Each structure stands twice: as C-alpha cells, then as structure tokens.
Amino acid sequence: MRAVISVVGKDRTGILALVSNECLKFGANIEDVSQTVMQDVFNMFMIVDINSGTEEFLKFVNHIEKTGKENNLVIHVMHEDIFNAMHTI
Image 1 (cartoon, helix red, strand yellow):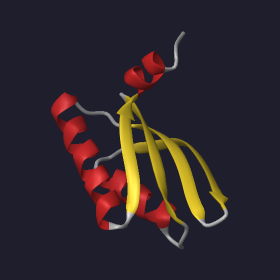
Image 2 (tube, one colour; image 1 turned 90 degrees about the horizontal axis):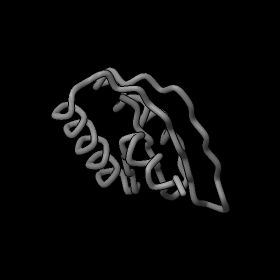
Image 3 (spheres, helix red, strand yellow; image 1 turned 90 degrees about the vertical axis):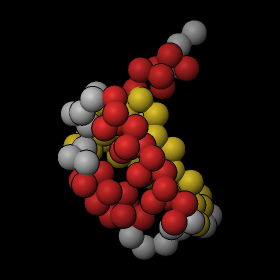
C-alpha cells in the first residue's frame, strides 16, 4: 500500500534525512519526494510504499507523526486511497 506524507516546519538541516530514516525503520520505500523552502518554512511531500497490513500501517502513521511532534514538525500521513478520494471530483 502507498501513503502520502506531508512535512511542514521551520527549515533546518536534516529534515529529509530524519523522515527518511523513520520510514526505513518500517521498511517503507520512498518512491517520490518533492520539497521546497518558502522563506524559512520547509515543505515536503513524499510518496512511500509500505508493504504491510492495516495494523502495521497505523503503527507507521503514529510513529511518523509522533516523530514530527518531537522535532517541531507537522507531519501527516494519509493512505493513498483516502488522498485520491479527497481529490476526485
């Protein structure tokens, strides 16, 4: 299953590495990354493939979002199906 991860926070060195390493802990493969810095605000979107069941996916979501809070970042993880449904008219 694939997920969309968004990351927003004050720009600093190592944000991409932090999120990538946390994804690695769950065996998530990063398929695409887009990042930009607008003034001092870091913005990133990632598409990751996480081969796991629903329970493991929920652990992944909770872990990544908690990591964001601990590092003064807003990280949101959304299952690809929900993301697509939200953006279909």
